[in-house]
Image 1 (cartoon, rainbow, N blue to C red):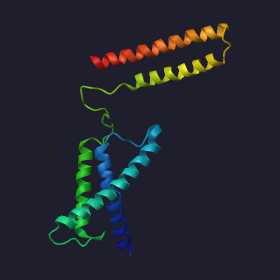
Image 2 (image 1 turned 30 degrees about the vertical axis):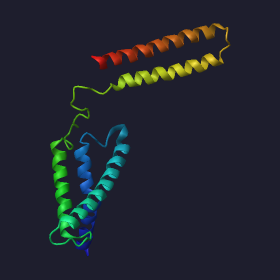
Image 3 (image 1 turned 135 degrees about the vertical axis):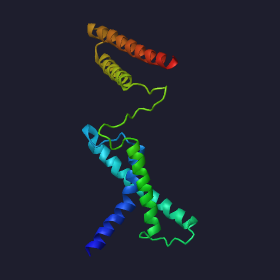
Image 4 (image 1 turned 180 degrees about the vertical axis):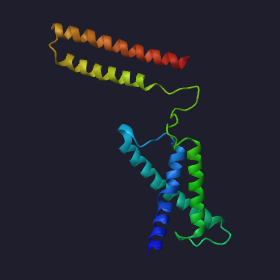
Length: 177
């Protein structure tokens, strides 16, 4: 009975987890389950592993049905399907190891190209300035029209818009060069 249970657990892991996990780690070697996004990463990895494994199992079964010379019997415990999924998981884990998925320090997530994505600091600065602009516009709408407070808010709004334009122009200049 225990041999049957162990075989069942191994078969379920092979059908529903290992090939997808290998594919996920090979595709996203920089993902780690730690820090502030640990719970999110865990859910992403498990979900991609499950759905990737199911998709790979279906594709392997279809390939064995279409190409197999001996006639694939199309059931989950078929040795050909197990061998195909084990081979895919082994190759995927090999690629993941080669890409540094299990290294102590994760590989860089940034692409190795001459064109870099916009720095998050610039995007964050523009978002902060837009948020501040909305806050000041709202305060200006609520302020009495002729009051000194309204004049101060107009000057602050102009300063914020000028700063946002400068940040955007600076970033566009970096793209142009």
